[in-house]
Length: 288
Picture 1 (cartoon, rainbow, N blue to C red):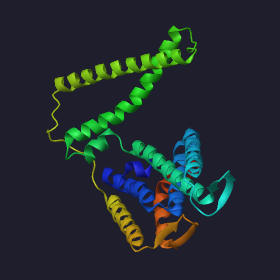
Picture 2: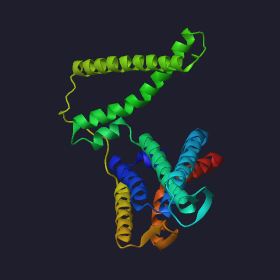
Picture 3: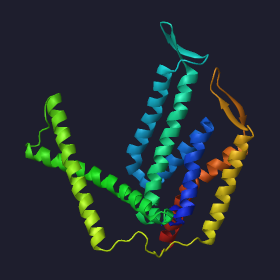
Picture 4: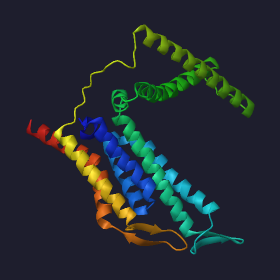
């Protein structure tokens, strides 16, 4: 079983907080690329070929944000090309690429977070507010269920129409609205059924619950190391040792290499943990 998925929920939350907050707060291309590269390696070794769609979407997100920013933000001294009196600059393009890398990495890490934190772990983390934990857990469960149900409704209506899609803009809009109406009706009915079922089974949000999660020695060491890395990164940021300038000319004002290396190593932990387990499994298979 994968090491990250076996960790304590609080340990997982702390790790993903580091992976999500640092790229957003630092706004530095070195840290953005490190986070994106680690996320890509993790999802590739975790999902294999299933990760292809996510990788394509991430690449398109980086490309789109970069081009979009260059098209509407005309600051910087290095002109790539000029249309009439408007200069499209390298600085705005690279800044857009950086923002796209942050967006792509955050989306991938959120995808991986959803795989690690199941409903039981969410309820445990929010046990200080049982009602909030229940709502959050149910929302996480409803999203994939509604997406799946929307596909079923669409396929059923296409089958009733002989398998042919509606022609014309008005017909497509009507088809979409009717599908959405059916999905809303299904969701409302499902909510009532869920509520009645929970009431019939005697659900009590204030009841005392037993938990199978215990913080192990490995979790303790992991939490201490992650907390120390996080504190070190933000101390370096507050001291002005991590700063990249995008305008009017791009250059690295100050870069703390120890901070970058520590962050990248921390981000690569899930990848190396799965890689090590795969190597051990193959070695055991050869010995057997």
